[in-house]
Length: 224
Image (cartoon, rainbow, N blue to C red; front, top):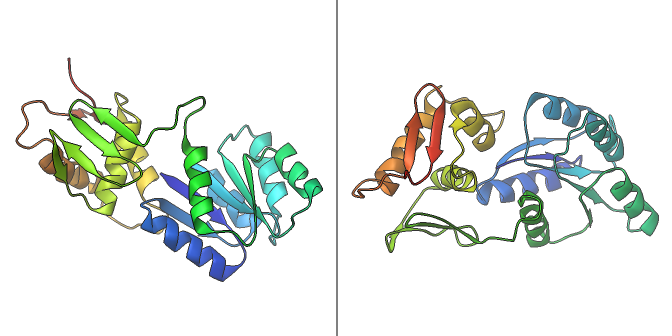
């Protein structure tokens, strides 16, 4: 999952990016509203953490421009202002949530998890595909009753695939959701990580779960 942080307090920006990356999110970070709009025009994000008081363009202006162009990406507004009027303005502008500084990182993380749920979706902490279990809260992966240890990036890739079970995902789409703009890897990086996952997830099992769709990408599913 890919998240954009737009926050002009450099220390807070750095801490948020570092903590989210430690939770296996891909993160892009910027320090003003103008940069935020440029990032949003260049990539698809799963969520945006947007400070209201920023130079260049404030958070409400950025949010309004997003909604005016029918960009429905979930947005959490950050602000030092705690008045009802400020909250109403933010929510009326199209924000999905509102967090007042100072806040606990665990609360921000919980709110992001809520935003990333699909509409009307019952909260899920465990996804199952065949005999594969992927636990979102503990990052535990089990197949056939046996625990599988994955690296952070391997888990992030599997998480995205299991949340899109049965959907063919292109290499570009997978790469866009797993790496930020600073990434400078090779063009076959997704193929490499898919190979890692296959070795850990499918090797030794008669039923394969990770499938190649030639010329298109990859899909996680149980073939009937």
